[in-house]
Image (cartoon, rainbow, N blue to C red; front, side, top):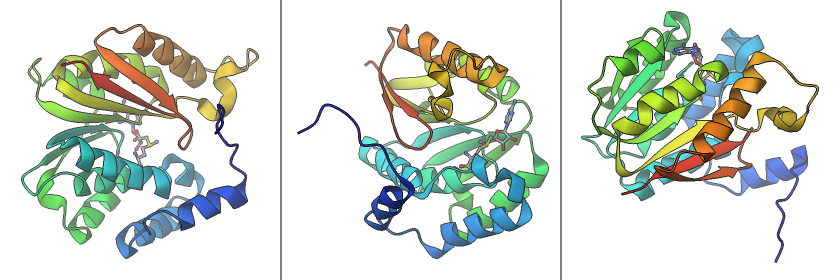
Length: 220
Ligand SMILES: C[S@@+](CC[C@H](N)C(=O)[O-])C[C@H]1O[C@@H](n2cnc3c(N)ncnc32)[C@H](O)[C@@H]1O
């Protein structure tokens, strides 16, 4: 028994990944190609254990309609799409034609392309153009950190009662608790964490997965 969470050394992280469901060839090749094409941007991609967790969460929650804010080369979208049924839908939002062109290829390879609709453009505009009514079971936010509060405010009314929101990078590599850290992305995350906690439409937990992953459950 313990009341704390284990600090993950690189070795313990490798052990944890090795003792989770193995990553298949599609995700393995996508991670490798992303690293080759965009070596300065590999840190944008979620890790393998987070991807598996998101597939299982989508499956366990029975999610059918999912929205993702921040798709990059497609790793998290494939994990989410794999967790929803064959008639499920995933609305993928991003601004980059270049990065999402890689995602499009891998959606085909992963055989999830039929579930995915890509909307290119600022995600806030994409969300505001949707009817303001419950239509998604699950949302994943992983884009510009200064935009998180805005995404949250547009997404919560569009999540069905009993649905969930996942929000990435909510620990900012520990910088959220460093008072000398005043950058706009870190302040954006702090503002978001306070904003979401005060929202009585949801219950939430901030988990030490990846760089911090907030899981919120919209009350029925
Ligand atoms: C951290 S990456 C997403 C990583 C992705 N979830 C994955 O697992 O590979 C952030 C993405 O957000 C996108 N982005 C940044 N600002 C955006 C905005 N205003 N609207 C939509 N997408 C945006 C970027 O183009 C980038 O692809």
